[in-house]
Figure 1 (cartoon, rainbow, N blue to C red):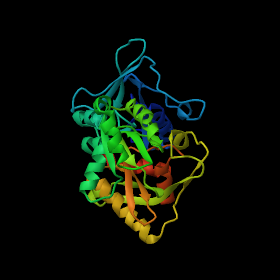
Figure 2 (figure 1 turned 90 degrees about the vertical axis):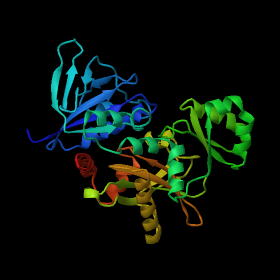
Figure 3 (figure 1 turned 60 degrees about the vertical axis):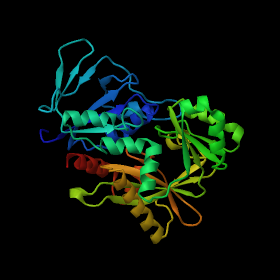
Figure 4 (figure 1 turned 135 degrees about the vertical axis):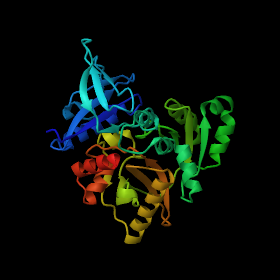
Length: 363
């Protein structure tokens, strides 16, 4: 099928969200329209090696007994050596001469966390002149860093939860002043790594004697952390897609995370289908609430200079105020993830969503 677009699907990576990236890639591998696309699965090992992976979605299934990963199989992917070429090559494990995988039309980086969702790999693709799915360097870096996301949104007049940012050095040299500042936020608070996702390293603190352990957990993931006021309200989310031809961003219907027996929407609930959380989509909102939420999501997406896709997470307070929790510029794309659920509920199927993302990247 010579007219098929050749897509390099890049996944895995060096971050703590490696397995989530693999599971997301498995969902894409299973759903992508093979009559339209030729897929080259490019895995990144936990050590950062680019390898040619198997085109087998079942290898990347995510469950409580097995976290999928990219294993170093000895192959090495070589990216084009200049912007005058889009040819991808691979050196096989046996050490033979590089073999051509053909010219790449577009890259689909299904990467979560540092070294993939934070602008770093987007910079590589910019240097190589390769079209890619998702936000550029600036928006990816902003969306990855919770401190700077909040700073930009606050400047744009969008409500965010009160917070303080703490560095590892500040905690080591002046733990008492950090604790005093945190206490001014009031209980409960959440302690989070500044640059991590999938609720990795996040702890809810309900008593101040729990704070030191929570900070240590977060600092294990990042050298900068946030201590953030807990917002009482419904947890609602929506998906955003860029508009075609410079049109305004498009926003899906809302989904809601309903806690039935968990403290918060943690890693196990997000990806291992653990009990205690229900994902409801579409969420029960009034027309006015949905309209306001969609308008804020589009404003937030524009404020960080987003492109391609994003998921915007809100709290809807009892007084009717929407407070943005975060923007995820490469949201989870597994079959149980909220981003595809919201678009499916908006009338866009999973395969059609993949088509649209690739079309936006090429545009």
